[in-house]
Image (cartoon, rainbow, N blue to C red):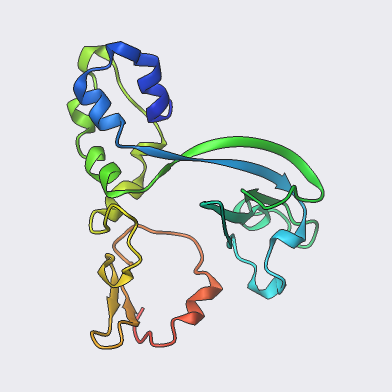
Length: 193
């Protein structure tokens, strides 16, 4: 079943086993309105601050992010910017396409469930496959269930014990990729990265 975990459970209906409900039910999803557009107003005001992924804030518990496709897809950067924005506060100007989609939301419950998937794979002749099996799940085992803002406890983040400011980041063995956000400059006390 190559689908989102909640959809797999809907397809199985009353025939879902206890383990299938428990494991697949641990994967929660966030649903987003997505726009492909060329509206520079949904990017940082200073073009020098543009990155492949641009966090624009949150409204109604939904994150607003703009992806700069010219960078992510190696498109020409001198022409129009091709942008994908999730959950904008308004419909972007120059919208080319709109759709809605869901994606798994990282949590400790999802991380733990990902290690139990082998208990349901192939049982009853059914195999499960979806984005919930991605790499994100193992990164959060030391984060708490309420998406802790106590970043000093996050894997790879080290803080000064007195000021609780970030002094070191060691993310090298977490298999993370992409550009660093310009917001990294806000970590004024960082001494090692």
